[in-house]
Length: 174
Image 1 (tube, rainbow, N blue to C red):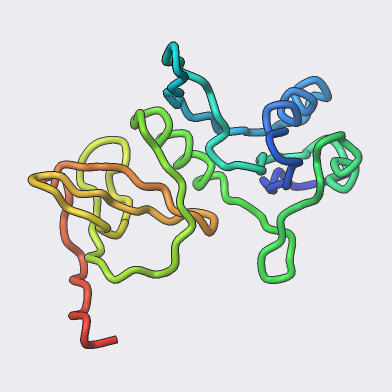
Image 2 (image 1 turned 90 degrees about the vertical axis):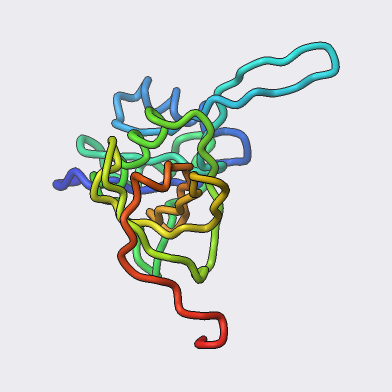
């Protein structure tokens, strides 16, 4: 039996995230498949659909079952590894994703490499005290990237709700 309540990430077959989540629910295994509301445009209509935020991934917390038995579930390909170790996700990171999806309507996930930008602290709202990097500014708004689990969550904030922590070095100082 798995003694701890650690969160792990499983890699699923393409477009099987919701099916895997339904199977995990049926098996009574705690999981989280973050869904994002997306407006799809067809030639004759628009429709709001729920799409997985992380394509190909589902978070699991197998407290009552052996975590290795999860690989037997149809649609699960393998666990995700980080630095040759089974990737473990902190509860705080799962909560951050839930808050992002609750507060923002348009959340995108991008895999990025370190970008030169000002580091800021969010000083109001649900994301108070979280640090991020400004990746774009327009008028009195700024797009801020908050890193979590090797991916970046991006949201738009009013500049007045951000406190600069560290200025990005000039481009010639790399």
